[in-house]
Image (cartoon, rainbow, N blue to C red; front, side):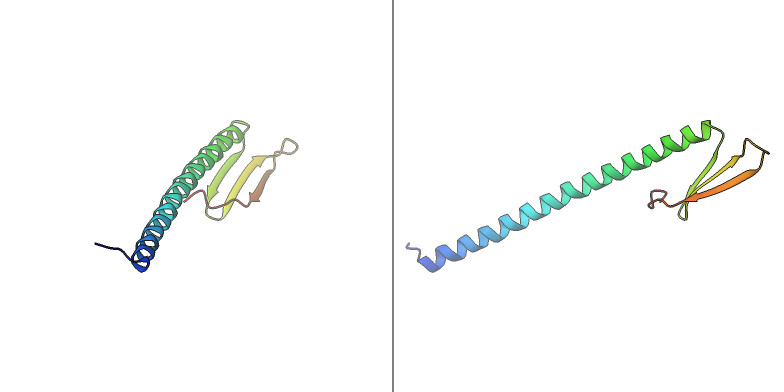
Length: 91
């Protein structure tokens, strides 16, 4: 059985398409798991920072609107409320 140039080009094209698709999909899977790992680490670090700040006597709340910190002023005992933006780690 003889193969023509056209047959060889068609087989080469099919193999190249399958290989390209496979490389793309495995790269996306690695990228997705790296993003999830980075998100989990950011959540862990945010919680650790929250605990550290709470140990200093500051009430910290993290929700979808941002980070809220309430603390007592050392002069006069007034309560101050501060709000900071954060990415949506509290999902």
